[in-house]
Structures are given as C-alpha cells and as structure tokens.
Image (cartoon, rainbow, N blue to C red; front, side, top):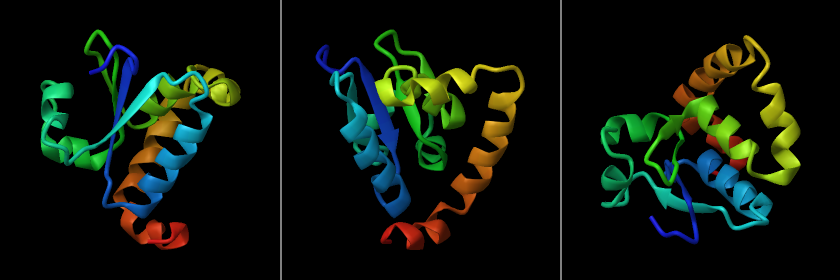
Length: 122
C-alpha cells in the first residue's frame, strides 16, 4: 500500500455494477485517500491479509493503513466517512441497527450483482 493512498479498496472488476460504483467513488475521492485494486490482482491477498480470494469476490473490502479490513456495508460506511459528499450517509450508518439492516441489503445485492449489472451496462 502506498502512503499517498492510505485506504485500499478491493472490488470485483468483472462486475459492471461494481466498476460503476468504483468510478463514482473515484470521482468523490477529492482528497485522494483511496487506492482501488481489483480483487483478482495478485497483490490483493497480500493487501487483505487473512482474507480468502473467495471472500474478496463476495463483497467490497477496504484495508486501512493499519491493516484493518472492512467488508460489505461496513466498508461503505468506512469509505463514506472519508468522502465529503457521503459523510451524511456514513453518519446514518452509525445509528443503532442501521448497519445490521444495511448488511442484510448488501448481502442480497451482492449475491445478485451480476444480474443487477445489466442495469449498469454489463
């Protein structure tokens, strides 16, 4: 991980919806805090130590400079708190019970992302 990009975001580059989300996140990363990496990149398993390739392909992950790994809705919450326009969403995800619901929704979307990708140009 580069010190100029302290948070690495790992995503499924074969998924059109995932690629679309990463383009949006890149546009919102005004302070250049993120480094995007396809989960299939050979270095991804080193970056996200302890995470299997299968797990990387099931959900978005982000890795902090200290090596902490967030995935799914918790990853989005972590990223939202660092992207100025998404801070309100990030704050909502901290309300009691909201992250639990967000994780349930995220898992459903993630399981169906390749079908949903048709809506995102896939």
